[in-house]
Length: 292
Length: 162
Image (cartoon, rainbow over all chains, first blue to last red; front, side):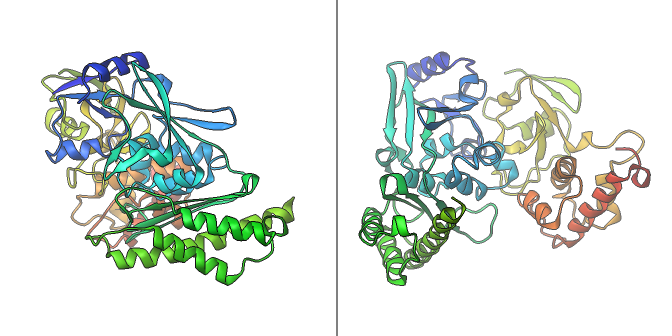
């Protein structure tokens, strides 16, 4: 096994182009488990922790450009105000030790359906910036997840950054597991209300081969909010609307039975989490008007 | 490959490091520092918690080469030659140690917690130590130890120098 430690992004991309089977490592919270247990024996380990370009985040064109090397701990401490949904998801991840190392980009690279950042990224409509020696491209989050632990990247590409637009409305995140810390989620749900474009964003985790949105639920809720003038009136949401939203979120899932939970439980849990998340988010939306 | 890093303030060089091995393996098997414990090897248990450039991390999840040139702090670096660190003494005094396997990781995590928070609330302690599993104590004595250490460190005369 070789170990390469590029210092510049150009060197990293050249290395990945020359060795498409190289395994990139940053926080190591997935890769090292594979190495420690003998499941992963790459010819080349490509350490990205020395690439200074990846370490920071900045606001560009109205969006937060989150460098691939920014840890969950920093998302929580530095971006809780700008990216509330992603910060909420980040707080549920692992333990302090894991959050000090793990990154959103690592979550994307692994592309596990249980990755905690995915529902928040889907609900917010994030974009993944990937690069290779051939150039840079941005992949909309909806097109990024292509299968169980598969994503839309080519063999010579690396994740540069994730672009997330700070929300115009409330965001919520909910996750079910056996305890608060150190769990792979049984099911997770992310919600974003976008009053500026009168839209609703959702994200489902651990309940389908890939993280996915619930488009029918989004359209239903956006339609109800629109037709009843609720975006402006900020009146209480009808119980029937909340219940129907939960049903439609659950209907978008395609879970399996596994050691963490049954498919039936996951579907039920999603309907509950969706109702709760909507209730919390709508309360946030209503209280925002009183402050304004 | 050769690895050079600073461990507990001393520069260490080790040779013949396998590229896929963890910082934990390097510390225990190549540097003779077995304080950090090897339990789950997947970041679940916190027994191998060490400081890497000032941040508590699971040494089992750091590739050896990632520590090149970095500052590593292990449980062996907490005490000074004359006395245990107040956190260590508090764990002893509170009876927070049973089999002892989780203790080194908890000591480092607690050291970090009190260094950053001073006197943490119980909720902050539970959150900060959520990545450190203990299968013996039921955690109550560990919470006692954290409170005791925080009190003593807030008043250095009661618990020795930090």
